[in-house]
Image 1 (cartoon, rainbow, N blue to C red):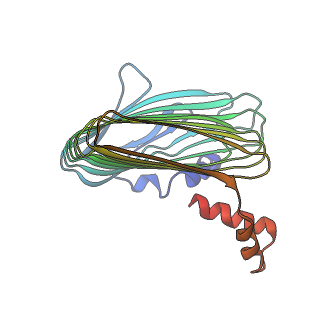
Image 2: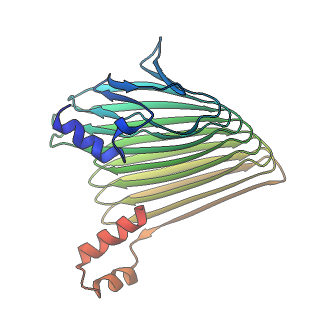
Length: 305
């Protein structure tokens, strides 16, 4: 692989993907490398671009990497990945995606990921997005995540937009059955004239289903961010949604919360806080010898950790 691909992989995945139990590396719309084992299988779809990932029942501590890299100018890549997680399986899935664009045409990756968790299954899903390149063509990433959780299953999602993504629409839809838990942590950084929109839709159908959604974002330059959440409680359930954002320069953040309780025992909470960096934080750090710019960067980095 060339140097550009390796540099992007260093940005979007935490460890060498070849050390995973199973992996599928997609570069410029094609599978470049793949590995499976007796417990985790990865197969191509027959009728669509993308793969099916099958995790057998009772698989413990399996690690799966499915990184995607685009370096071809003007490429529009769309992929459908379905994850079938067996009963009582416990896996970590890393799904980093990066675009390098030195041209004038837009480069785009749309990733549609659908998760089917059987009873007692546990999944940690880590997703990082990154853009780079000297061209004036846009780097566009549109992730769609659909989640179906059966009784007693749990899922944790950590999703980060590191930098360099010009336009993104991030959609997450989940249906939770009895005794399920879904925890989502989203972090987004935008600058210049970049635009990032997020839509969360979570339906809590089962008794004792719960979700906790946290979105932290920083909008700098003339960038725009929009956060929408729609939480529906149809049973004795719990949901807590937090949207916290820092504005700098001419950045704009819009939060649109919606909660619907269809059961007297549904406990649904939404909190939002948007504002500039607090002056006392800057003063405290500058008193330690940091410049104003260094103090701002320290606060932003800490906020997005």
